[in-house]
Length: 229
Ligand SMILES: [Zn+2]
Image (cartoon, rainbow, N blue to C red; front, top):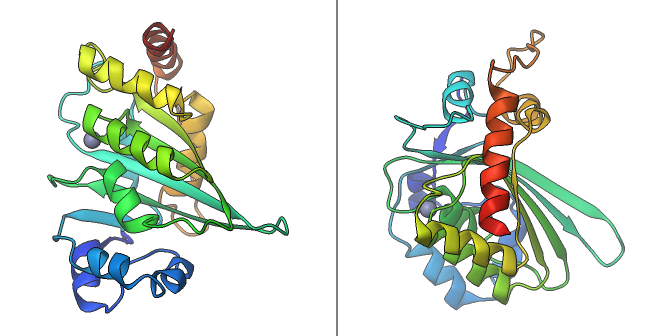
């Protein structure tokens, strides 16, 4: 069954903010103001989990040219934290924004990675159904600007409203801020399928690329190159 849990009730019941990786709660306790701020965040409808249902993947991640009906953002993430000794810890999961005021990108920084330990290096990879809106791009730029030990690679299935000058400017700013932005290749969709989509036990199905997957990837890759040139 769907491993879904709403962030809202969890955050409301728990004394500490909901977090997928309990370790970042430790240093939050040393920062009571930050902790208070997190607890007092207004409730928002963000769904988090480890693996998303097959039908969501097939519909939401499909790299169609016109994304009608796809009004949610699905964000799969891998967070790698590297200590001074070279040891690496990783966590992964996905976020989905559901008619919420907070988009999945913003929710990532609010719920999954609210703080970064300055003693660690963070390599974060997102696989997102579509590229960020201008407001989320701005949030990402600000976060990268104040978190020098954070690197972010964003792979997107589609470009969101790329014809808008505002969105194009936002994507350029992302690049200038050091954020790597790529269009998902067929292999990337397969990676998401294998690592982030629910598989029936003992019956994991091979990824079935849709007919125009490569053609659509090339279409969006060219658009992105034109925007970022
Ligand atoms: Zn957004």
